[in-house]
Image (tube, rainbow, N blue to C red; front, side, top):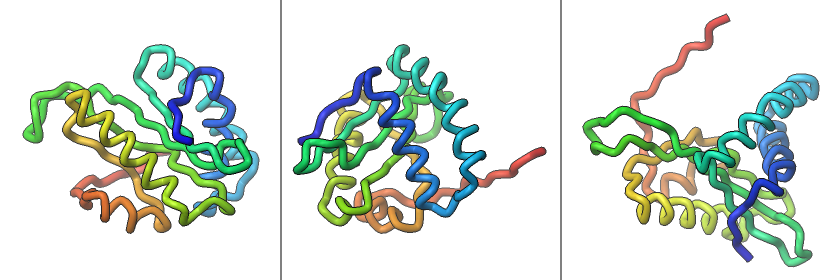
Length: 151
């Protein structure tokens, strides 16, 4: 069953973020703890302000099997459209034993449908190696974004 998350689900979202980064090879538990500690209040604030939405899929055992977040980012009007918000999909996570069952696809389709229905034309994400094929099948394309890490 697919359902929208609420503020009562913050800990599950934090746990999914932790597990997602661990699965991508970030094994430093102290760094993961520091990230989770900083992420929790940010998440609560964004959810309270309606700037972060999340959805879950419940598995056959009734527990949360997969989740996805959508951060509604303030963005200047751009060539892709005059809207002032951009969707940023993040924290896409499926428990290992529940993968390859279409849960991430269902979550992505839900988030993209929400964006379309709410006038958000540009949606971005950072793809893991495991998720890249799904995102490409859904129409995502690589862009010219670059990054530098300072300090």
